[in-house]
Image 1 (cartoon, helix red, strand yellow):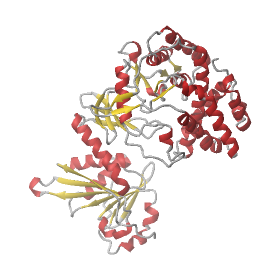
Image 2 (spheres, one colour):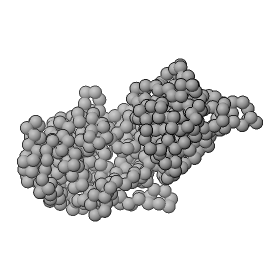
Image 3 (spheres, rainbow, N blue to C red):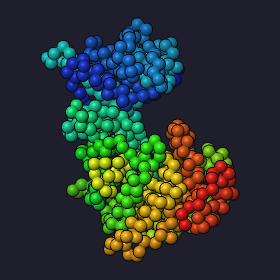
Image 4 (spheres, rainbow, N blue to C red):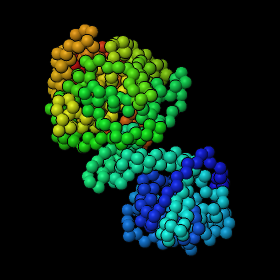
Length: 529
């Protein structure tokens, strides 16, 4: 048996709830299922009859998605194992354990490995339970009635920040008038953010955005992490500031109905589910409006500092050479070894970075605008009841930087997740150019230069495709999300097409030398020139 785990935990978070009756206890169990999983430990404490087994039974039934499941108390068997769809659930009652060492005879280590473990009477286990846990202590108050309970939830160690976030969400929803809403999980994206649709009994909906502060990664260069070098938003403040800025510019970003900035949670206006694509592909009218929204943004005078609230401001960071090059290096770190199965020398890697820094020199020197960085079909919704460019609902922009206007245009027209036919790409690119050329504001110091824009479009298209190849390979290898690999052939074709631009001749030579398979399996296309 493994050595006893230490009892001390680095941190604790407590949350006390009142449970009016058994229905409230069952509802709490249903809520807990949303934020516990494999390798988690839930300990239940309290006197006999306090409600531990009622809660455990409700929790197991919710996890098994079977409200009628027979869940006997393991008082005499000591341990009961249930097989859910994704991981085992272990329910243990240690009331009859005389000595903690008896857990070894139960096959405790084997049963609990990779499982969600629910333990009643955890104090009988002594030091043999993981210090990281969610403890729920139930108490009776006879003066409040036979069914009344209090539940004190304590997140210990690794479970502390999780409980803190859950508590913050509960508090935000209560204060904003959404506490009674049904919470419906939504499909996530490639980030660590999560979203839920809130639906009130009267049918009113909103979106719960869960975006806690980003944990900084290890230093990569000059003592800075990847997120710092790439200027990724550290917390929800960036979203709040850019949201207000887009709305002030006449564009459709969701109204923020409630916000807890420190916890990173917000209730947002619900833009619905109608997008800019259909099962048949892109919808030209909607893509044209998305292009027009960018043209409007790019010829508008835009500040580099925005208010977060009445006291705080947010300064939009630059999309500088360090940010652009640290992104393309993801190809070297993830795509090259795990998809291309190639080993590169340190010299080849250094040449790659130097060629990219040279290719990007004009990009970073250009007059910047807001670059939203995630302006593509999954993040654009169609608001048919609005007019003009306001019909494009924008929902993902917290990583906005000050950069070249071509980046968001290529992000839209070389969509990583859906095919944009060449003819359609050129047509929409021409539409953007016409709108920019027709604009005449004090922001435009010179007339729109289509040739220079086309060159930047190819460079940033190749930069973005290179980055995404690395990101999608990382999502597969590190994050166990292999479905992103299905998009690699499309992105590889974009990369080959963009590398055909004369401005990228030297870089194309590097890719041809070190990643020849890209050109062998991609249909040759020519980027706009």
